Length: 592
Image (cartoon, rainbow, N blue to C red; front, side, top):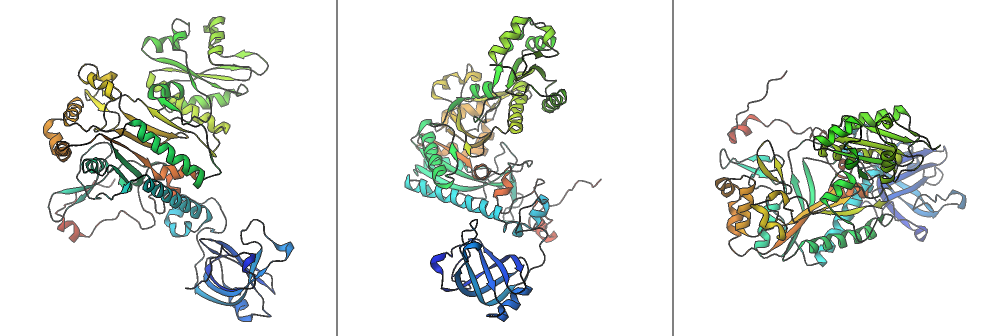
């Protein structure tokens, strides 16, 4: 070994010991007679001191090293003088008097500072990701990710789960996002697909009698990128036999509650037990099915007051089957017209035609261009319903229900960010349940499942599948944390006849169903147990626990927003011979 100790473990108890260290030069300070080096490895920092009187060769060597050089040092641990103790450093009470130094590898000047946090273009960071990963921020994030996954494995092992790996090369069954396809050389013209999730395989494991399965699974989806998406991602995949919805919820709630206490003890859970919201309640209160429950700014329904109110915008929306809803932006009654116009532009981005408002001036005056259209008692009713006080700003959207929910849901989050309402050290876990089983696709003239093809309706709603599918609710559940869905699951269909009925409802012909899912339908004939499960996005969960804004910050080697690996420059063309072996001829789009 090149080292007897790590750079982060030395304390006053080591004073007097002769030790060896190895790591990267984090910072160098030349005081003429003495040279100080902060040496860094993954475990921390320690200060080295070279004195030309006692160790001239070591002093000379450290005189020429620079940041990010890799060095080995041998010396004696000594206590720092009282006035030189660094309370911000875990090794701050000691230093190492160096007797011998060996340069293991010099370094070019890095393209950005590693020993100091600064704004660096993301593509530069990703191109030199191996350097970016040396920074304290990324080391913290990767360490947190490791601890989260280790906790999950240990917890589920104690609960009797088996970790079982499922294939990466599987069958393409187009649903949801696009599959990544892998051409087969052995079977010309045939392809494997990379799994979007192990959904079918984990259900097969339940048929196989495993009963309690989990996997830290790699998943792949060919979809457009954004801050919380990657072409390849990691999820905690869980499936359990002989369970109902409450059993799965209890498992996850118990596991994540304990994880927070042990892995991120500086954070606290907003409310326990975790709140349960129906899909309808989540939409009506927050405008979205993945709400942030840490603050108010909830939506208020004013549709009944809009009919015949005298304000044409509201009346027309209601006549056309739309809604009128509002948000009380508490304390923003001093917003200027320019600031309100900026909010109007914001909601227009998401489809709203405009944003009506009423200002309740801190002085007690009520101001708005729409006041002239309303009776005084109607205004008072609106204010009472919205819990308005002097100093508040009331904001309204009138449109189709989906536009109202989407724009006000986004506006709520936007206002909360501007006001700093979401404390990152508070974790607002909640469950959203009772989703509609399916949504009607007007263009395709068919029902689309709101979750996936294997989700069961709630038992009490199964009888509605022929007569009133629009009233059916799915036996699914989403776990939401601070404006993000971090897990989703359901009780599955384990009865072949019901599965066939659902395929029929969504317009999947028998022949197509047999071709895509014949292996599952056949397996269900051999004693499939009732089962259900959940999948939790590891990347997104760690992102939130690490207080990061996108999942690329908690993945070692992510793709950029164009799904490119800029470090390795991938994807790249294959060699002509490789295409030939796979019987592939290219038909590329013409360059403009």
